[in-house]
Structure formats: structure tokens, C-alpha cells
Length: 276
Image (tube, helix red, strand yellow):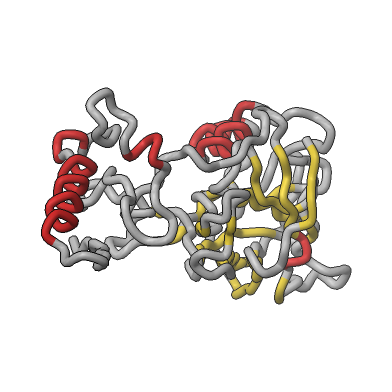
């Protein structure tokens, strides 16, 4: 596993607190005092649409998948540099799946481990697109550390996290270290897959992939970040791969262009703008 500095223009990490009286939970081995503190964690995708430009010059978005946050003592670490990630971190980094990692943390006694995600218009968990933020609350006591981790969407197996072992949530006087902790974040390569150019990958109209929407699973065949033609026309009959294959959009588009071209005055050109 190797790391690289995380550009502060991509993801921010803010910490705030308020008094709490719920039951606290930290990793096994920590001795909590009687008064836990409720701490708010806010992660924000600071990028703008189209900020990510591929090696082929195609603009795309920086996307961060749902992740995890865990309060722990200073002897525990989610991962180690120079060592390939375990199965939980691998699932998070490659697939954006935080469930296996949460199960692992709970089995280790991390009762205050929590998932975080952006919210779509139905308040369901969703990836963090440009401008989105994820808000969650954890409980902690003086001496506790915080680790957060989330998949870097446009990568094979990279994830964003704080350094191994997390960062201190409290200062020497026992006060919560409120404020901007963006500088704690890094990019890490989980080391479980080879890095490859992400051109021939599915790109969808509904970037959040919200089940039940009419465009759920529909490939993006318009805009500035369209799906690769190898997928849009990848079926044996030249139609798109996936559930919308039988709509034959590529063939219908070709027929429309051919019909318009046939009747255009000499020297004229045309373009087709799809509205729906």
C-alpha cells in the first residue's frame, strides 16, 4: 500500500462537537470516562463537475463512495503502509462497499464504527458527487482517535483516509479539536489491483444509480462524459450493453442521422441534441 497527498480542492474534513449523554463505545482496550462527547463529522466533495480529466482528454467527476468512520484508541489502525489491504479495506477501495469493513470493525469491538454517505433526493445513501457532503455523529472520550475512509470513485483500488492510526480528537486539555482537519486526509493505493486508465468503464446518466428511477442503469450517451463507445455499441448487434439493449438507441441514432443527411441542402451540416 502506498500513499499520495490528497489535494485539498477535492475533499474536506470538518469536526464539531456538542455535549452528549448517550452510551459511548470505542475499540476494545480503551477505558471511557463517564461523560462521552457527541462529535459531528462532515466530509464535503469540494470538486466541481468535470474537474477530473482523463488521459484521453475526457472530463469526468471526482466521486467518493459511502465510507466508514471509527473511533478508536491510539494502538489500533485500519491499515498499514507498505502492506496490501485486508478484505474489508479491499471491498471499500475497489467496490465502495463498506459493509464487510463495518462487520470486521464490529467483530473487533468497535461499537462506535459508523457508515457515512451523501443523501439523494429520497434521503437514501448515495455516492458523494461534486458539491455533496456526508454528515455523521460519533461518540468519543479524551484519548480517542478518529479514522475515516472512503473509496476514490474513478480508480481501481484507491481510497481516501487519514494516516494509519487516525488523528487525535482531543487536545492535551481534553477539549475536542474542532475545526478543519482536511490536512489529515491522504490518497492511498490499497495495492489489491493494478492501476489502469479508466476509459472503457460504464458511465450512467444517473450517476447515483438510484434504483426505481426511470433512467436507472441507462448508459450515458450524451454530455461531456459519455460512456465509451466499446460499451455503448458493445453488443453483438451493435446496440448498447446492459438492460437498455433492446431500445436500440445506437441504431436509431444512426438511422436518424442518415435520414437527416439525405435531405439536407448541399453544404449544410447537422447535429442531434437528445432531450430525454
